[in-house]
Image 1 (cartoon, rainbow, N blue to C red):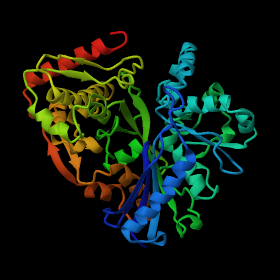
Image 2 (image 1 turned 135 degrees about the vertical axis):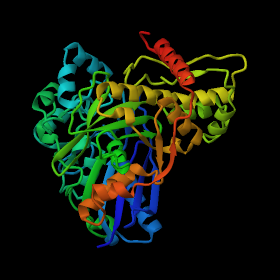
Image 3 (image 1 turned 180 degrees about the vertical axis):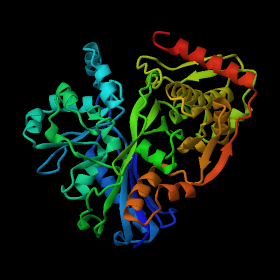
Image 4 (image 1 turned 45 degrees about the vertical axis):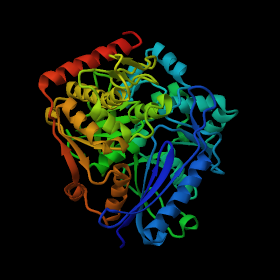
Length: 497
């Protein structure tokens, strides 16, 4: 059997399809952006039909780029933007309205109301999450309440709910498979991560009928077969994981204590805690890292809302740079005697603060501060926020995190200056891999290993290759002073600071 595996990486702003060959090297790619819809302030939507069209077109692009046909593929894996909600008609497959995106904040007041009822502890105990509009459950509840006739139709079993993976699998299989995987289910506020089942108590609170929920499978499983009319051949769908979990897998973070951090628009750090479902005391999320062969591996997760977006702000908001790549050289030239701190709380602060009312601030400006100092502050902000997450993880779980090596991926890791500063401020090694497409690689490995054409976990781990390791090289007193300054800046930025 061919070793070619196709990964569909359905992200927040674009869809990518990547063909990997039998040696797990990239053989072909396709990418297409799609429309971001903002109906009101704080609302973010996607057109599910446009997402579907982008998937079909990018797969064709990737196959052409690789010089192969669909019949040459051994398997297909899917990774997706998590928490985004789609509801569609069971009979026709038509969405009842636009998808509500993970970034959407329309259910903030609903979350506050649930908190006033003292329900957050129940949700956290069962799901490992906090009550925040970020997650899928309150979005689905809103849709059922606000789309005419939706709640009654859902109760009759006429409607299907899914995150993007479920919607795509439904479409790819011609409606034959109504499924999701454990990682996507774990982000819905409706899935009991200890019992690995949809939770009836939470469904009752959110007024969601169980009939509209998909079957939950392992991350490597039989999710159905692609209708041959779509790409010209049947393709088994054998792997699914939410994007951050897929990146964790792609980084081969299979052992407890291993940690990865993805630096894109935001930043998401996951620490593998093995079979230990760690209950965070520091406002981190407890989540499913992956489920294989019926065995669940858990993780602690920290979410940083603004990472690369801070550099985009320097370019698009302030106009002090023309491209993100300029920040590396500017940061190197910054005056070392100036300690300028940027707290990029443009949309509030994520973990471990979870302060939705906080707003961005800059501290330490002098008359001589300029583009170089602001560039350094923007890049350092990512490093400081990662240090906050690592500190919280070490407080929550003490099983060897003091020896953690951070594996990194995402667009920002191309900046050598940033990665060195990250190692310096973490006081821990940072490993940058050879293959930076770790999210797609993780989905492909799930499918390829299930198909029997790619190695198992041990074999995959052995083939993970490091491009470069960044070792900490900062004086301890300087590190301590810089971290103290950062903590002071964050304290003054918090809405109740």
